[in-house]
Length: 460
Ligand SMILES: NC(=O)c1ccc[n+]([C@@H]2O[C@H](COP(=O)([O-])OP(=O)(O)OC[C@H]3O[C@@H](n4cnc5c(N)ncnc54)[C@H](O)[C@@H]3O)[C@@H](O)[C@H]2O)c1
Image (tube, rainbow, N blue to C red; front, side, top):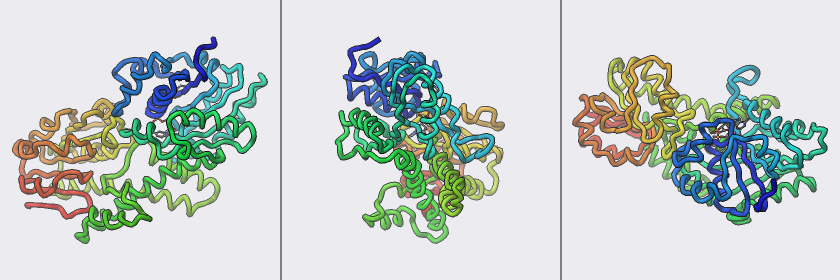
């Protein structure tokens, strides 16, 4: 059925990327019909309500602007494929957990199933947009599957990786640093690429829309995440050195970051990076490099992940050693569980590893987080040990021997730490895994304070 819209855009996969990205396109381009489909019925129901399936500041307003006008959510995949001219594919591409490449390469089963669904349901030419993050050269496989049809239909595959960061997704989508669109450098390829450029040009300044060949586009996404993660691991490795030399990682980062060649962003020492992408995308890069026999390249990038594991491990060891080498039966309140502030997403959060290790040591763990408790419960399901979930940080800290701050939520900066201190067991410890608290003030209240990469302020 034809409708009044200029273009029919479909997105397959209504997750952290598909939902916000398509909601932004719909909000900015009322002339297009944008439909998002997913196999997960519950998720689609939630997208149709005001209780969205993901927490992201500003997202509900954007969804409300367009929902029912030119933005639609559905589980009806086949029919929507048939009606679409442009299909963004935004399904999950996790690290493979089985077989060849397990633990490193991308698991492309959801991706390939989607390609086959598109092939089966289509009866006209379409542009397929890779929105998911994929190993370089995946577009080639997608094209082979899609163009193996005998219906005479032609599919043009274009790469348009997503650079949004969770927690700031709406700002990132509205004012992106760049939008990258890669295609084959053929007449058809360039035409398809232009169609996608035209969509973004509705609100993104033209000079921020970069075009490239398709393989560069696929690879650039992996490399961007690898570079970002590398900066975190770089400063975290230095934080360990600061702790033994009495240098202060904050001062070092400030001095280093003032060099305009280096820049000041992403130089914040912490308990480590998390999130569904950094580790997965680096391991993917490692796997690809290995498969081309580039062992040195693979080793170099793998070390970014190794430092991250080391940083998480160091944090737990510090807790144990500081608390007189035993935390059995001690109450430890975890402030934050999400992998970063302003999201409820806990995928690959350092909180998961830390909570598991604390439970392994027989500690009594109380997890607090303003948005991530539901996900935390799923992550910790079936793990033996004493564990509680408490949204109120004051209650979580009551009777605790220590607080471990895991996520840099603003709410934790401004708590009444005098009140918290009064309700805790003594000596009271605080391990600031994000260096966001006022350490001197906490020390004056009576805490033993352990930041990352800075001198501890202790009374014992
Ligand atoms: N989360 C991020 O911050 C982020 C940022 C940039 C890029 N990416 C990339 O985007 C992709 C999606 O990530 P995400 O975080 O949105 O994942 P997600 O798990 O939140 O969402 C993926 C969705 O795809 C659906 N799906 C899977 N197979 C399907 C099928 N055959 N048909 C219909 N729906 C199907 C799933 O049910 C799920 O809802 C990944 O490749 C990821 O690497 C993620």
